[in-house]
Image 1 (cartoon, rainbow, N blue to C red):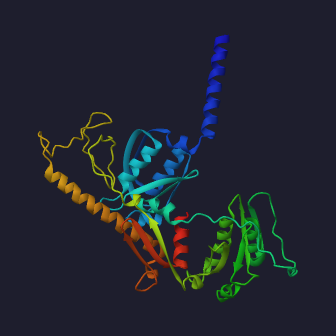
Image 2 (image 1 turned 120 degrees about the vertical axis):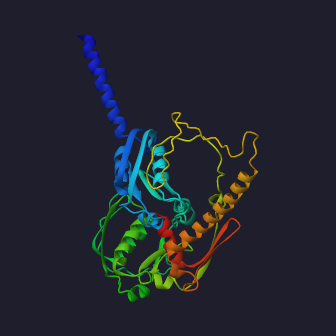
Length: 380
């Protein structure tokens, strides 16, 4: 009787422990979680990712604009089967299976507890073209000498909660921006004259509520609300110029150009197509190959083109040509992605921008507006 009771207690402890582990699992643990099997037959791609979110306990978000450029939409039918794989390997195999042939590969990355899916080029460029956040100023600007600051007019005070929390409820824009400025402890200059050309004044009301966000993200949310009905040039943006946060319109930012150079040597590296073990996963999607070779997980993937005596000169020459073509495609993809992200009309001959790859350097000449649009796109 006592033995049976102890067995019940042990089972209960094991179940509770497993539940606690699942509830507190880290993203790394979720990625290596073993998935027994999945099977989809003409399932919409968006539904596949929803299923993967349920299996992993992680949110899965797709850059549908980037996927559309390679021929994929939310409704693209997916037929795919796999078994006994860690979740990260399952995700890799799925992206390989659904990518249309002879287009840019798909890729994913972790953003806290969110898996973000996009094209390989966008994933590789996300940390390269999004500038690091500026360091806050030690102290806001103070008047020089004995001059006393002008007395500030009474203004509505948004609630000041502990931590990084904002709660603007029809708050005039000027005090809202000042609150974010104080929160970040930085100098800020607002070009009110430029904003007024877009119909925005210091009294324009904003309503934004958020918690545990950075001051930069808070500023984005305030300005995004202002920009809801504006085009690219009349919208309002912020950027850091010589330690000062400047708030102005796209029309002002689009007047002058600057040059930025990025080292993209590792982005242009192409892995040789060498012979290796083949994982036997049954797929029959857009990029399927059902010629299973058997032998469990590892099939027969030997290269017989060289014959028994190791001859393979023609194959080597072909592989060399393929490598050159692959490198050129990667270069073209990088340039095309940057151009599409900012907008084709922002580049010569219609715009002021130019872009080229010199060796392993990506050289971009663009207006401040163009670089801001690039930053916003790759900072997601």
